[in-house]
Length: 333
Ligand code: HEM
Ligand SMILES: *[C@@H]1O[C@H](CO)[C@@H](O)[C@H](O)[C@H]1NC(C)=O
Ligand SMILES: *[C@@H]1O[C@H](CO)[C@@H](O)[C@H](O)[C@H]1NC(C)=O
Ligand SMILES: CC(=O)N[C@H]1CO[C@H](CO)[C@@H](O)[C@@H]1O
Picture 1: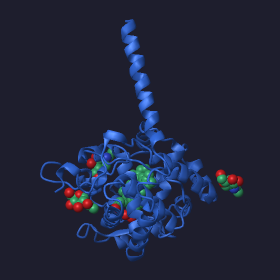
Picture 2: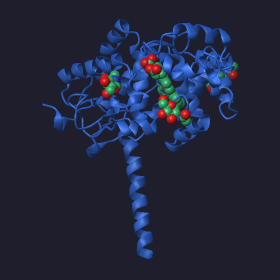
Picture 3: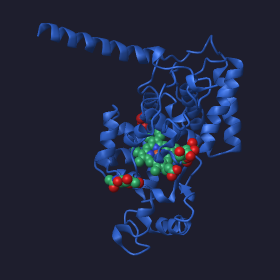
Picture 4: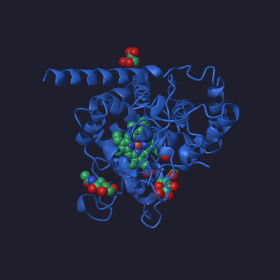
């Protein structure tokens, strides 16, 4: 019995030490000697990419969230599927993860490999690029600690079970975030990411067509009727053309601001989960706070993004620095 207890304590201690050392190993100046120009190189590549393809920023932000929530921020989301393994990217929920964001990371990696080969992890590149792109859109600039290793595995099944869909309830979303140590405040602040980017019609079609088994144009009464009409027009053909997408934030689509929350207060949210956040008593006060005070939103968003960026990171031998972001080193030529 005593031995048992001792064993338990010892393993608890080891777990505590391990989890402390994981975040302690991430440092702002991790590449100071090994790749001193890391920030400039990433920023140059990302800026050019964003100017040529303005959808890159929102894509990268979503990619970063999906990477971190599925088995930690370890670039597992960048791995391509092959005959032997259906990777995270292959998961159905990933179908819409945009190519421009992948391309931006691959380009940054190529540039970095020329200057400091084998040094900068893909997970760190994604974290830095996301921060840079958010601030390029007018959002907050926050510090990004570095030293993440890239994962040694990637699985589509993990993606399905760790991400929420717009038909989830607020209860389900709150528990998903809580299961990863994120508070309701962090959930609401991170959801402000929907102030940029697109959603495909199929993600909200059940709110604008045949709502509650009603007629063809029956729409969700919590959606502003003018928005519902506009979306019904835009999405009229979506079953034939599933690539049709509309702006998440119809007021200031390309700007990272607090308009997402202001929209929710007027019934201008696209996704069911977003709109419900403005009604649920646990989340509504935060929606109102961020709608009224962009500084509070930016503060909380910055903190939550830094925390997201530390979620389940791998250091030391738990991972590798990939030579190519889309393949594990032991499989690359
Ligand atoms: C809380 C649960 C969440 C749900 C159910 C959800 C769901 C979705 C859905 C369905 C889309 C549309 C995808 C498409 O049609 O291509 C989307 C887009 C997006 N999501 Fe979320 N999301 C959630 C949280 C987050 C968080 C926490 C972030 C980032 C911190 C985020 C960032 C984004 C971005 C930036 C886009 C636009 C992507 C683009 O334009 O390429 N989402 N989300
Ligand atoms: C949500 O939608 C997905 C398909 O997009 C479906 O598989 C799932 O069963 C739905 N969940 C709920 C709770 O309705
Ligand atoms: C907005 O939020 C910031 C940061 O939390 C706070 O310092 C400021 O006092 C708030 N402004 C108003 C008008 O409430
Ligand atoms: C952007 C991206 O890589 N999307 C992938 C999502 O999954 C499908 C199905 O495997 C791939 O074909 C896409 O390339």
